[in-house]
Length: 202
Image (cartoon, rainbow, N blue to C red; front, top):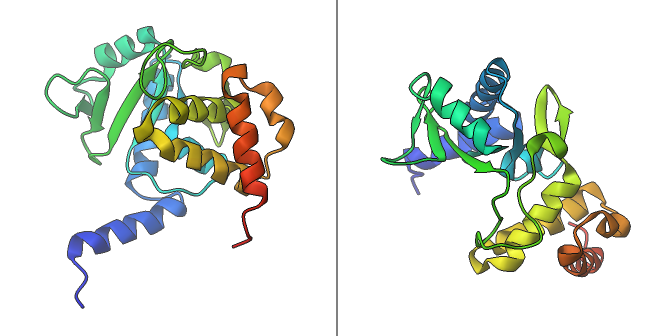
C-alpha cells in the first residue's frame, strides 16, 4: 500500500508540531513578536493553548484573542506586511504569507460556540492570560470555561467538551476547579470530571 505524499507531509508536520517545531510554531513566534512590537494585547487560545497547557492535541491553525481595537491595529499595521486575508472579504481570518498557516481572531465580548449571548464571553486578554515561554496564553481556568460554554451551546462544537475531559485527565485537574468557573458551566464541568475519573488508564 502506497501512502500519498500529502499524508506523509501531514505526518511529518504533526511530528514537528509536538516537538514544538514546524510551520505552526514558526508562525506563532513571528506573530507574537509582531503583536508585541505594535503594542497589541493578545492571548493565544484554541489548540495551541491546549498544547501549552499540557494536552497534546494537533491543530492546523492558530486562534488568537484580542480586543476589537487590537484587531483594528492588526489590520492597520500588519495587513499586507506578512499577513493577508485567508479568503476574500475576511475580517477576522488571515494567513501568514510565508508559512500559509491560518490565524483566526476572536475579540473581547464575542460569545463562544453558537455566537449567541450567554453568561460566558471572550474576555479582555489582559484580564485572563498567563505568560509561558514568552507567549501570552489564555489562563487554564478561562480556557476550560470557554470550551464548556462552546460545547454546551453548539452541537458542532462537541469536541470542545472532549478537550475539557482530556485536560482534566492530562493535567489531573481538581474537582473544585468548578468553583472558579461561571455558574452556567459548573454542572457540566463536574459531570465531565466524574466521567474522567472512571475512564480506564491508557
